[in-house]
Amino acid sequence: ILICSSTFGQTPNIAVAANMKPAIEELQILYKATPKPEFKIIYGSSGNFYSQIRNGAPYSLFISADEQYPLELAGAGLTQGYGKTYAIGRLALITNKNFPYKPSFTTSELKKIISESNKISIAKPDLAPYGKASLQFLSKIGLLDDAKDKFVFGENISSATVYVSTGAANVGFTALSLATSQEVAKTTNFIAIPDSLYEPIKQRMVLLKNAPPVVVEFYDFLQTPKAKDILRAHGYAVP
Image (cartoon, rainbow, N blue to C red):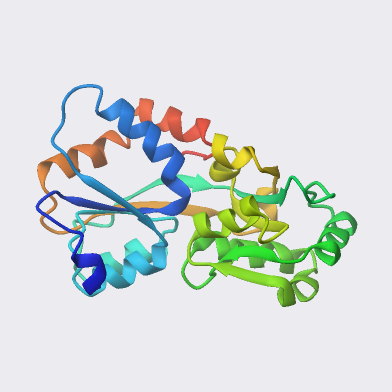
């Protein structure tokens, strides 16, 4: 928290789950098409942001990759209401392009991918909802025991994705929104995992107490039809 706090100034700060980075960058461009007061966006894992906010970190808006953390903050009286579910995320399997096997979610093919991989990258499941969903998927198809000894954990979903992009891990799980991004697609192949094979990744955002008007305005903007169109284009379902 001390290290984090040293970066904060008078500009309002928005905590955003790492899976949202490509979409938020595009949304910011649209939002700032007309001059707006500045705010600062910080990306990371939902679990870490939750802990920081509970310990007094000065965020004005929390855009989480799950529902649990925002709802717990609301229950603790730290927010303006219970917020909104703004998107439903999708899980993807990625492989490095130098790895001889392309992604597959069929049990027999995935079993071969797991056995031939050096490492399997996932986000820490206790901090990142997409990491939790990765374990649910592997458990659902009966391959969790085959995979668990090869796990390498990223602090958030972006870190887990970088492991595969750089080849530190041949195989990994990420958000579909990151897998389809231009940067990640240069070095990896991906396949979207059917929604039925893991619990829905409902993503909620919530305003913190004393959020300034510029942050409230951005929160409202994220619920507009134009913003929802961008979220859909990045692979999210929109409730």
